[in-house]
Length: 261
Ligand code: NAD
Image (cartoon, rainbow, N blue to C red; front, side, top):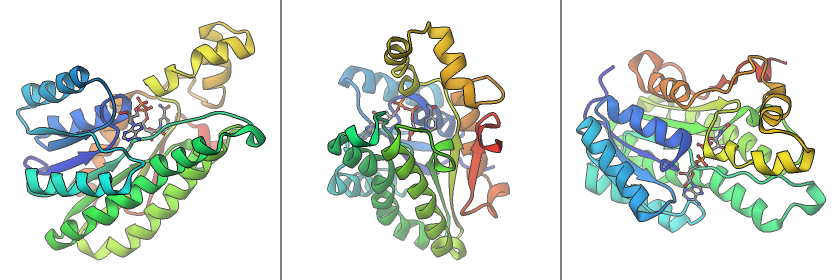
């Protein structure tokens, strides 16, 4: 796999899975444009850490994935500063859990915008350059919730199911240009997004942290193990390889058997 010198944009890469994928790409010599929220000091530590650890260029865009103009500007800025966007990872995502009749309208709008529409906007902006260079890898972080539902996650499940539709459509459009478009669908990965759900669930169900992990989160995951960030990053790297060139329009589960049930 010769990825050295390629350029990437990874949305939502200041934390969790996105940061793992960004570091995984950098370890292969890929320059990265980071994106996501955090304090200026945290973000600078991540950015400078990648440059120091892997000797690649690491840039940062503060683009808000709910804002189409900022998204287009992020891609343009990566193309200008890095020279191209060869690898695009749409990973930024948020969650909100509530019964449908109480689901806050602004949470629905934000989740559809960040978890689905942002990928449309980044791909729309990055596709022309990839087509011109006849090479590209677009990887969308979906979820087991792109294949099955859980109650109280109307917006998240809808957005992730939609992301698969976008992935398949664009995969067909770009298939003859050396560009693959795929989804990675993790089960539960131990990240801040999951960690933040624990205290509320402990309170709501009167459970200990261990009980929440085992009986709520991992109840649907036959391996009873969290997927690791490194395992997800390794799958993303594989999708960037030449060996994965015929894999396009696919939704690859990495979920400990969750969606086999
Ligand atoms: P995380 O909370 O650790 O990271 C989310 C990232 O998205 C952060 O960098 C955050 O700053 C960024 N982000 C949030 N809103 C943004 C916005 N408006 N604009 C730009 N960036 C924004 O979460 P994670 O668990 O690493 O999740 C990453 C992706 O993986 C999400 O799409 C999530 O749905 C998906 N996923 C996670 C799991 C899991 O168990 N953790 C499972 C399946 C899928």
